[in-house]
Amino acid sequence: MGYEKFTWVIQNFSYLQYLQCSQSNIFVIGGCKWFLKGYHDAKYLSLYLEVANYKTLPCGWRRHTRFRLTVVNQLSDELSQQREMEKWFDQKLFLSGYQMLLLTKLIAKKGGFLVNNEVKIVVEVDVLQVIGNLDVSEESLEVNQPMKRIKLNDDGASVKESIDVNGFLVLPSQAESLKHIFEKHPEMALKFRAKNQRMRTSSINLLLNIIETMCQSLQDLSIDDLGQAEQALTYLENSGFKVDWLERKLEEVKEKKMEEQIGKSRMQELEEELKVFKQRCSDIEALLEKEKQKCSDIEALLEKEKVKALAAARAPPLRLDDVV
Image (cartoon, rainbow, N blue to C red; front, side, top):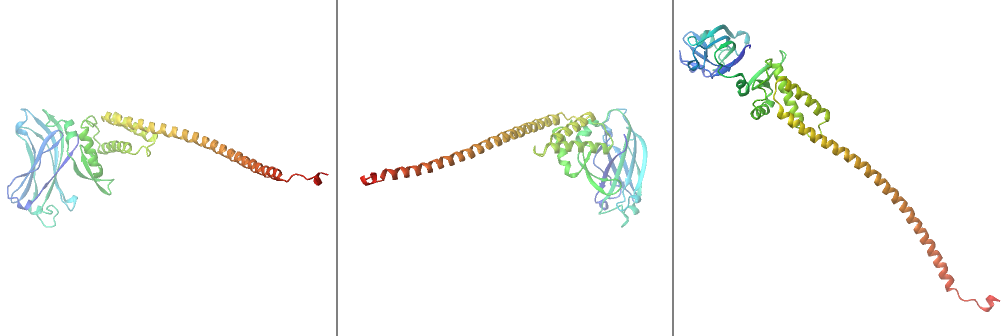
């Protein structure tokens, strides 16, 4: 299964009295519930990993576990103090741990272990074998795991912050969207079994990119975009994601895009028809102008003839001398 990590920050450490026990919140690793317990005496800080609900587990339960406890030096990782152990936990041995660090070293000024009156503890647990039932099923663990912030090292260079949402590491800007998706579709990733975090992150980013593509305006979307989204969705489905709800939405978007494309084609056809009709109208108007000009010319000629005829009609009659 591999190691999984939980971080516990002991706050106001200087106010803890000798032998006063402090414990972390309960966390789940490997389907089992655990918590960390710590206290210090006059010499040492001691830490223990404990099975959280050992009193209520059925008779005969056992858990073969390998774990590491680390007191983190917040100034230099190389100075952090780590101890490792492999144990079978059972009804008699339900906790295990170590004297981790000399108290004088822990509280030393500028020592790096006590910063802002806080001590940072990291436990890494690898559950090798469980006899009896798991406390939490893998499906429930995958769906209900809360969001937590993690620092990711990107190729050993720059460090960027990611947030764990249901076992998927995403950017802070993506976290709320992904949380909302899981709230509406909690069964979405139940059958997705990839454990490699890079593969998990790539797959969930692919899902978010598909949704982002679908949320674009139809004008900005192309048929190729939707075709690629469909191929990506098929890949996710084959990987174990339950995305039938997204397939239906994609079909709706494709139908709307096709309607838009058909509408655009019809508009282009009508525009061409209108262009031809306007040209015909323009030709008719030009011909009409010519006919109007002819009409005007004829009217002008008619007026001239009228003037001549009127002048002739008004001419005085001929006299005898004009005739003889």
